[in-house]
Length: 165
Image (tube, helix red, strand yellow):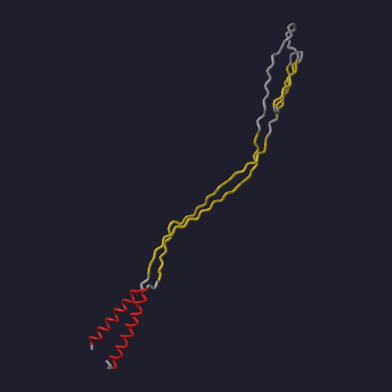
């Protein structure tokens, strides 16, 4: 009689142990890396004054002189090149008068600048510990066996105590 109670007790304890270890939690580690990239393009227009160089005029003329008085013969030269003009005048007394005009202008030029910004934000490593409880098929079978064993063992103990076995 004591031997059957001992066997029954060992049987019930073994099912408790199997049921406890069959429903262990599963631990997982996840390593993630996140990168956020963004590109920003910005166009800017601006006005710039650019100086335009002036034009040049060269005059080359042989000055003729009178053979009797040894004074230059009077003449007038007018020349133009682009925006530059020059007037040369030599009178009978030998005096030279030069008048030159050249406009140096500034032009307004519209420029467009393109600026590209690249922003990168990166999180290298993110470690998360998760505990997942999953019920596997072996867990369900072990629980059913434990339930049957507890009910059988409890019933046998009650029958032994009442003296019906």
